[in-house]
Structure formats: C-alpha cells, structure tokens
Image (cartoon, rainbow, N blue to C red; front, side, top):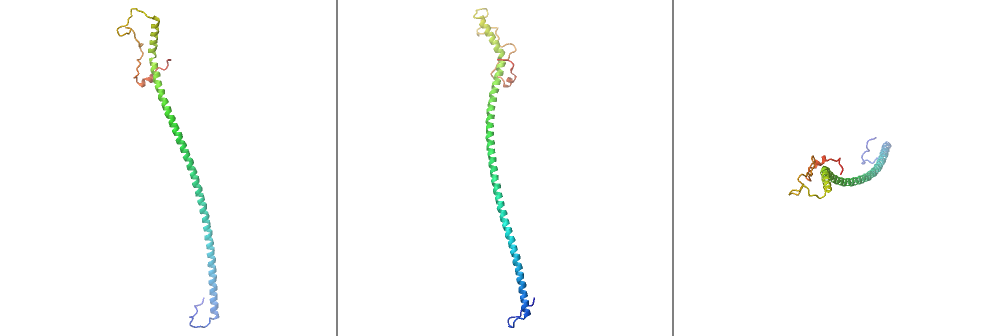
Length: 183
C-alpha cells in the first residue's frame, strides 16, 4: 500500500498510480469486510443453531423433570396408601392381640380352677361316698352321737394324703395339678 495522499492544500488530481493503489486498497478492504461478514454470519448461524438446540434440550429437560415429578408424586401416593394400609393392619393385629391376651387370661384362670378342682377331687369323692353311706344307713339313734359341735367324733372329711383345698393357694401350685382325673 502506498503512503497516504498529500494534504488537501494542494488541489492537484491524484495520479493514476495513486488511484490504482487506492482502488486496490478499497478492494482489499471490501474483500476483508465481506470475509468478516461471512464469518460473522456463519458464527451467528452457529450461535442460533446452538441456542435453538439449547432451547430444545431445555424444553426436553423440563418435560423430563415434570414427568419425573409426576412419577414421584404417584410413587409417594402409592407408598402413603401402603403405609395407611399397613397402619390399619397393625391396628387390626393389635386388637386381635388384645383379644387373644384376654382369652389367654380367661383360659389361665379356668386352668387354675380346673387344677383346684382336680386337687379337691379325692376330698369330694370321699364326701360323696360318706353321704351315700349315710343315706343308706338312714336315720339311726345308735351309739355314735354327735358331740356338742355337731360333728361325729371319729369323722375325717379329708382322706389321708389329700391336700387341703384353699382359695388363697399359690398360682404356681396350679401348675402341679393332677389333670389325669375326670370330673
């Protein structure tokens, strides 16, 4: 490129060489501007494409997140329903346990009573045998007369080896009851 034109103080027309150099310089500038504009257009197109791609990916990501959120909500609702159902079942089972505990207590009490009855069986058998014998004998005014307490002097209501029946007996004694006898 040539040196800059002389100051406008001289009004001489430019020389053909200067004109050619100026034209070549302008053509080079126009070429460079066109090249830069093409690169700028290409860069803008790339940026627009990337922006569009980012917008599409953002929309896809939002849809995916919304779907995940809906799925999470469905799973939470299902788990809450399972929890409610499990809690109801636990309450049912607790009620059943309370019923069974009550039944166990009643059966234990009955078992203790049966044990006491079994322990008293020999006494009852003896009493029934003596009552039966007394009925067979009938009214008699024999030698044996009741003493002042109203009891026969030689009577023994508890057979030998039989244990006394007591309502205040130890509950552990009922575990040793004789269950082989029939009532």
